[in-house]
Amino acid sequence: MLELSIRNEVDGLLFSSEGYERAKTIWNSEYGKTSENIMNLPVITESQTSKVREFYKTLLFNIQSLETLGKLQDVKGNVRCVIDKLKRIKSELVRGQSGWQEWDFPQLVNALKAWKDINPIEPSDDSKKKQPWPSRHFQTRDHHTQPGVCILSP
Image 1 (spheres, rainbow, N blue to C red):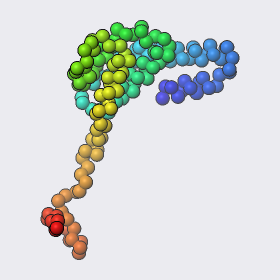
Image 2: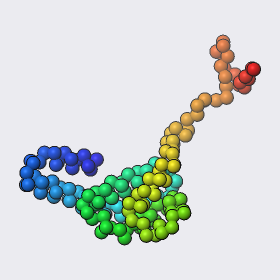
Image 3: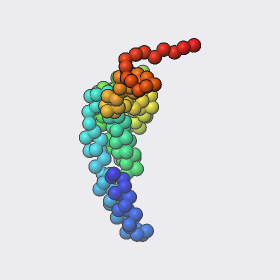
């Protein structure tokens, strides 16, 4: 992951003004592309919670990076473009939110977090195919399988 590779690079630097300047250069070279990363987020056209969660994590990481660099205000005009990438859930995000057209990125991130918190993770396609019981057959004590129903006695 990106932050781990940067951490590894910075951990090896000396604690000096030269090391600090080198760390700042590494940080800016990696995180300076953050606004581009935000604009390259995928368009979400399906209602898959996992895709929205991944979108949220990537957006949050890049927003935090821009905030750390003091450049978050420089990309404020891109918020509407990012909201438009969330085609499938846009109406849910902005419903009842007066002034959503003027949101900044922290407000968008908060709305996405709230959406994520109320929408459970969907089971994967593989687990949807699995059934808890292979069929409606039940096994008798003498291990014969036959169709039947379970009758509960009082």
